Amino acid sequence: MFRFTAKALVCALSIGLAGLTQAADPVVIKFSHVVAEHTPKGQGALLFKKLAEERLPGKVRVEVYPNSSLFGDGKEMEALLLGDVQIIAPSLAKFEHYSKGVQVFDLPFLFDDMAAVDRFQASPAGQGLLHSMEDKGITGLGYWHNGLKQLSANKPLYEPKDARGLKFRVQASAVLEEQFKAVRANPRKMSFAEVYQGLQTGVVNGAENPYSNIYSQKMHEVQKYITESDHGLLDYMVITNTRFWNGLPEEVRGELRKIMDEVSAEVNRQAEALNQGDKQRILAAGTTEIIELTPEQRAKWREAMQPVWKKFEGEIGADLIEAAQAANRP
Ligand code: LMR
Image 1 (cartoon, rainbow, N blue to C red):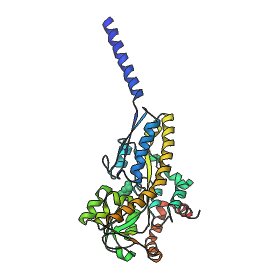
Image 2: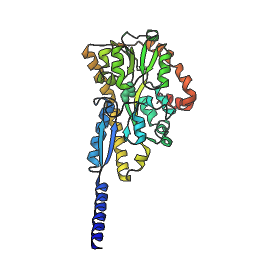
Image 3: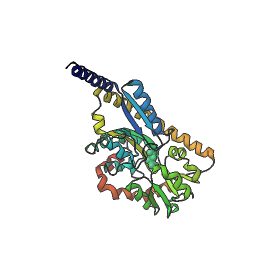
Image 4: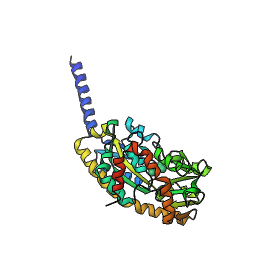
């Protein structure tokens, strides 16, 4: 009888202790992404880790996995839904299976500049898109800039006809496929981690990315020309697993949200300078000529690519496209 009671006591104690340890265990947030650390997204992830661990000591631990080291861009969304990772920040081009509306960001020549992007992302329409995937288990926490995309190739691209017949790497986006088809080039979907090799081996002849991605992946070493086209946007939506997020203790969730807002503002303040710095580094490397377009040449690219808007108007919604365009008129 005594032995039974002692055993029960030990058992109860160890369950109690386990409970205590569990309660004291920090929430682990795995933040996985596909770019290098010295990029807007790479820096944002590190700042989020720093602030979260400073302000929620012992309550939250953030593990950042850059450079597709945990999941590549083909797998990260699935991993988020399965709970294998808690935060990711895919480019807005990678949401088409989850939200048709988010495709609006891929439309070529939609935004005049990054100030217009800021206004649209802050608008009710832009904020609405952060919540457009909650029925699928995805909650948007904010937008992070990278910036405007430039075209790169091994031949100079001044006008749309120069791209004819070339194979361009695109992200997994039907809009971007159509964008290249509109200039009679051949789009080829490829994950980010494969782009350098694709360009090096000639599987593709060209690509599109902001300077920070071109430089940090050394794409300039295998591309003789970059056309400063600013023809489209590469930004991110920072997302989390809705169930995970709603299951966090309220004070932790509230603090993390504040931190995320702060980090988003900081990333968005710094992104342009980072891209301009990388443009200078590409010039200094001497591998690549950067072509500046005349207004007439740029107008030709716009004219050739803009018909893509009509093709996707049904899926995206004319209202959303109009709301995005309205952001060009402050
Ligand atoms: C790309 O695939 O080119 C980009 O989306 C990579 C990134 O996350 O910036």
